[in-house]
Amino acid sequence: MPTTMPASVSRTDVQPALTFRAMNEADLDAVCAAENRIYPFPWTRGNFIDSLHSGDAAWICEAAGVPVGYAVVSLVLDEAQLLNISILPEYQGQGLGTLLLHHICAEVRQRRAARLFLEVRPSNDAGRALYQRFGFHIIGQRKGYYPAVDGREDALVMALDLEAPAP
Image (spheres, one colour):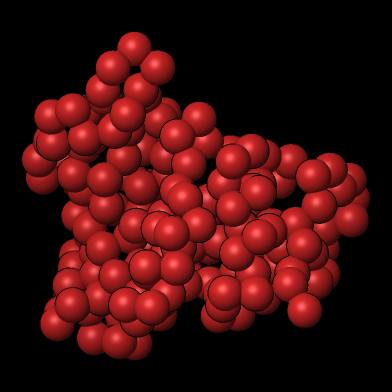
């Protein structure tokens, strides 16, 4: 049975204890609906299916059984690439992104990744602040990487050394 991500759930319905489970195709209707609410240029269902079929690690983050976020990570040899990390809008600003990123770091460390990479929009102040708190540092820039309302937006490439002590 597909998991549903309600369009509006009261913040009081969320307990602080989070659980994480593997994302599967049954989750994709809800994940894609959430993605479309969160981003002006969302991942498509095909993007998520490609990630799941290629063996990328993907999780649903739940609070009291209510899906509040999700993430997708690609692992190749000793490197991990954070492809998507998202918290539903009504749950943002409560530290859930921090908890989800802790989970991701723990998972990829267990899978023997030495570094975790990601791209982030320079305009994503909250995302950049989160990653910097974790110890990610900017290692490059991709020109015109993201679609934007007025054309294209660059991406900052960031990396985290996973062999250093956990944040």
